[in-house]
Length: 109
Image (cartoon, rainbow, N blue to C red; front, side, top):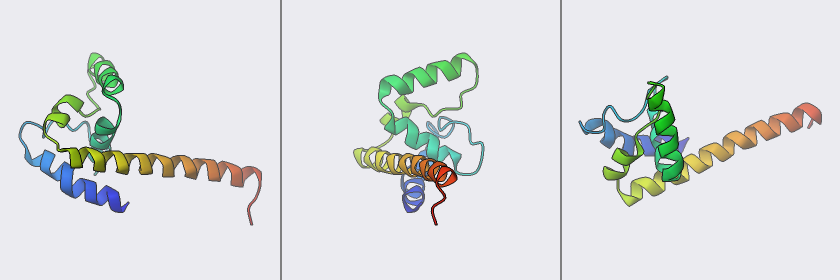
């Protein structure tokens, strides 16, 4: 969660202030959701991010952040920070699901 705040304050705040990227951060379903959208767009390989973007815009949704514009307006440090944050965030989520499932079947006391 510390990386969530750091990434939001350093990178996403800069992108929110930029008029070219302000509306390209994806749909914010809840407060701070755009931080996850930006981290995902900068972490996924470009081919996968383009496929997600193409599918969401073909349906008229536009939920995802635009990786092309984000790559143009971020530094290498921003991208590394996004990758570290998103990978640790995803791994902790998967670990939570796995541990909850294991605890359900074998009650750890």
